[in-house]
Image (cartoon, rainbow, N blue to C red; front, side, top):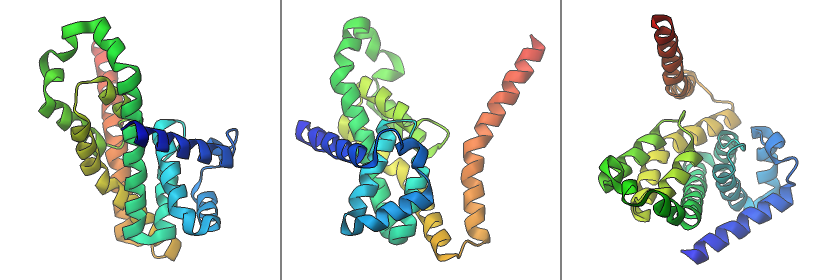
Length: 217
């Protein structure tokens, strides 16, 4: 596990140094990424995986443009594969960092209280991780870090994340592929709108609900 963590950290450092720390968040858009991936040639998939991993660990970096660029460059199947591999790697890296650096301190602080109730159930924790991966409005990286602080087993976290990220990864890679081919149709726009609705609807509902509660008070 430590070897995998070291390899991931080395890859992230290489991407960071090659791209340039001051510009990476500002320059991450689909067109720029497509050019970067194209220039990378055979190493393009490694660039996609590295950037996706970095996007998960460093929250200000958006992951959607990377997924769209992967779909544009490698099509539905391979684009989805590289996106999933990068997102899974980033989630595991964030999980391991939290587990190695924060779990022991949290146990000392909270003791047995940390594992009481629902937070002590492996099945419940697994379901929480899986469900959160299906909801794009929930912070991907935050869930990974919090899961690392919980008692969920690494293999459960990995499987729940893998199952949860597959649909959105395919959707974004598909949209990137269709956009690159100039074949975005009504079905594609419906899928995009559906993803946007899934992201925004709960936020709108929460805002309206908070407003009503404020008036009642």
